[in-house]
Image (cartoon, rainbow, N blue to C red; front, side, top):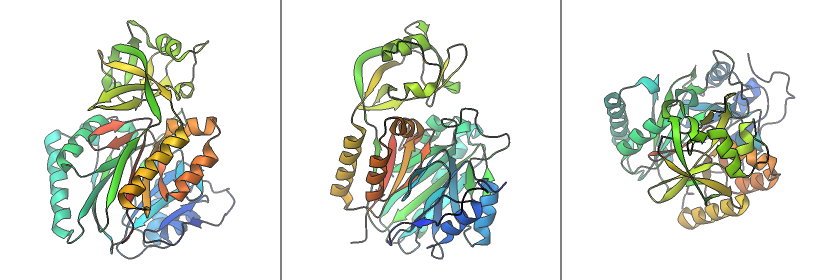
Length: 393
């Protein structure tokens, strides 16, 4: 179906005039496609994020009819743009050919892809980019992956190594967090050149005429409460026991709950944290099974020591991130933002939405709420992973 067909036809919002056009539309699929086509120059690469109220196959067809064929996209529970965070709509941006050179590829059934083939295809894509990049001296990569593939740890690890220092940011597409029942049978989560698909990943390598700065940010700090994962199934991201006892009971007690929660979002303020290369990454839990087994958005192995996180000041930490970005590259023309759905839920529950939307708007953020974030070689969670693009000097 066309998605949100009964929603009122509201006027699409296009960001302030700038060198990197961005768009956001809360309307039906046809008006969303019209918004996405606006401001697009010939040869531009289009990146978009659509709420699951849109049928990606129908959206792809509407875009093709308007000449938007070079497009990659992801399904999500929330889109982020000039209108803020929206549960129904579409947001995205165009990378004009005069400032960017982009190459991309589709990795179908990526979870079953052999590592030699994956490495070979990434190497070939890099050669393609270098062959046409010309004077565009700065590089970055965008990865969109179907969260259902559950291969992001391996995928980010291989891609990050093969990209050899090229900043990579990415997000896992889907709406499991805000829609625990998941997608309707047969629905798709990725859009690639007008084609809707599931079970795959899309990698886009970009050469930019201006500088970029990438971050994997969270507002959590590790507490002194340490625990050990003692029974887990990393392939399915399940944890059954912590410290040798039922995982749900131990986790709930560590968080200080008086009763044991039955909904995963109640744990959003208290993800677990692991240390990788001197940096702490959060591992958020997204589902509780009837037997008390916990499903996380990232794999946790038996024997792993984890620290219970405690939330810091979400506003102040984001302000610090954007201040550092401006010191490095100036006021960004665009920030590609991948915000974990657990962070989005925390923001909404704590009444922080308007303030964070204003902060995102001031820094030209366009992106989506994800079910996992990729940063260089790491599959992260509970993070705001982003890449800022400097203006033309």
